[in-house]
Amino acid sequence: MELQTAKGVRDIPSEEKIVKNKVVDTLKEVFEKYGFSPLETPILERYENLAAKFAAGEESDALKETFQLTDQGKRKLGLRFDLTVPLSRYIAMNPQLKMPFKRYEMGIVFRDGPIKIGRYREFTQMDIDTIGTNSMLADAEILATVQESFKQLKLDIIIKINNRKLLNGVLKQAGIKESEEAIIAIDKLDKIGKEGVVKELTERGYKNQQIETVFSLIKEGITLKQLNGKITDIEGKEGLVELEELFNYLTEMNVSQAVFDISLARGLAYYTGTAFEVFLKERAITSSLAGGGRYDKMIGGFAGGNREVPAVGISFGVATIMDALILKDKQIRKTVAQVYVIPIRTLTASLKIVQQLREKGIKADFDLTQRGMSKNLDYASALGIPYVLIIGEKELKEKKVLLRDMSSGEQNLLTINEVVSKLR
Image 1 (cartoon, rainbow, N blue to C red):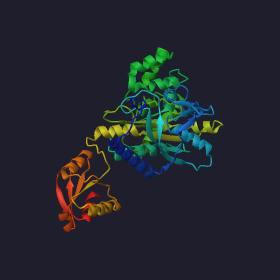
Image 2: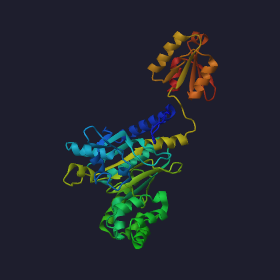
Image 3: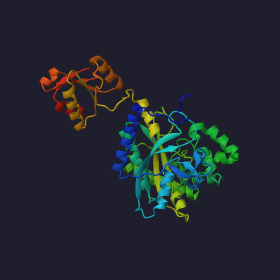
Image 4: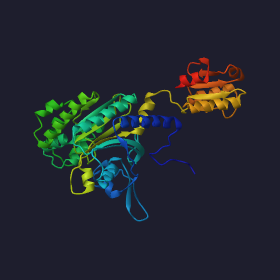
């Protein structure tokens, strides 16, 4: 039997898992700094929840790419394709929650879609969401969290922002009333270009005049100020007002990496207002690193009664962010160890020292094979361990140890406390 993983999934080796943990830990720290609290929802959802028209929608790529299965009770289930639909279902099932409710969640999601660098069929997302307020302050706070998160990860990004109400207004002015199919096509503008979108809109039955009107407004570089005199639809004007308010707040919060992009659509049916997507400035990876927006109708749809429960959030693609960091960082570590301890005929004393280091919070590895110095140094170098601690009889007599910097080759005789201070 030839051993293989399932198509579109992968094992994550230690050197990549270290990067993943860095991403997760960094995002979690920033999320909590901004007042978001943790939540966990199930991987399995009832298929009708995922397929609801106020969730993914029948026409969305997300629903087409949903993994479906049936349990032993013949109930139709699906693997969640994002964390937003399960969150909305959770809020609808727990009406006693105090609002606004701010949460973050990390979890595995699934898409049975095409595979390329930065895109897999099983991947980890980390989300932040604010439920219970329609103020653009909530949107601004989320985007401030986004900017700081990528600043901490040392990735240079751009945050593209648009508003579904504005897009709906543009389409209605073009005589397109049922806008969802058109929005799904426009969402592909960055991938297939104007010609590709025009072709798709034509195939969907839209007239040349309608398509020309759409592209007279949806064009690169158009500003909110320029649109002010051109948008006549009431819903479109409402979207413009929300965007202007949002950008005013972003200016006050020093969110400088956010830009308006009229072509940004986000191809999920549940978006009702602002929409945003995060990309690397240098597009070594073309997939978005994060994306989200407002979905004010989904929770009310689950709760019944067609009432609106305002909600806004964003999902961070952990695997894509990992790929970006791995491409950026030339030196990949294969272990978390800060120091590798090599005893030279001092096994008992060295065991005590390595435990001392660990008790003081130093990530210390130890020679378990009692091999020679040369092989031990090669081992530490191959794993990318930054320091080696050599403990011989001579060093112990001086109540010191020899700390070797593996990058420079510099060696210093130090006390254990001095080693701890340096490694910290």
